[in-house]
Image: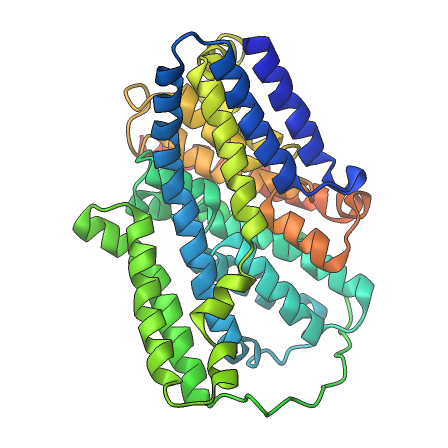
Length: 426
């Protein structure tokens, strides 16, 4: 049974990794993998009721992550629909390549920590289309955005799905992850930027401005209101968890509810066509549902491996052969560039119990850094990379040639800083 389930899991991951070659969306592959693993498990187990209870138990834990993602995506879509992000992007007037690269990278870095790396990448790629006309130059900036988004998401409990998973799983606390992973994350970005500062020269060419559609134009006051309310709602989630001790998805749903009321009041009395354009219902239609289903399939698959004990055996193999937790974590980070950081972190959560590595143990914090930033080494290694790949049609080998070595340079630099930091702090 275990061999069959593991084989299904491996085949599913091959399909996910080769999504663009086989022309099958990775969400479909993930869902099929998740369902088939549990189907085989229950067919080969005499106690069907026990397997059903195990599945429901795991699904209860996973639903918190899915609802959190759905709520966060909806809030961001609402802010974007109200042109809230234009307030930020409208302030960028720089054309010098080096200066613009630093500006874009650090906006991405901090925005990713507040929002998430996937959404931030989508926003920043849209921004770059307005800032840079040349396709080759823009692609290079997009590649750095992927590195910056992953680095920015690693040190925030709401910035990356894997960090959120560790936060929800009680492996890390919001305050400690910010305190201990911020410096390695910023080094991960700064080192490639310093290197590029000696390589880039000249100015970028701006695209011609397009005439705006004023039919549904919003006032600056409305834009600011939704931007402030949306970002404040996202930032409030860790505070809500600390005060109430409720799971983060409750906080994000609370923030969504507040923003929903604000938007309804803001457009009260206006024509239906106008209201529908800026409604929460419209935002829900635009969120990336395939990504949510992808995470569901992946996490359900990992739960099956955990249920049959495969992850415990993998933990033993890693401990026996690598024998160093830092090397284990760095290996997981590099593997995430080949596969995906979500299943690898989920596997680590299943492999190592809190009794072995308690909450805020350096193992979990280093895992958050490595899994969050290691995926930048390849374009298919992170949600941010996949989003950029789809939006700008970046090829796998172009990214490997132009960005991968820079990403690895930053990854190992940040890892060294974290290890040194922990050594100094004892």
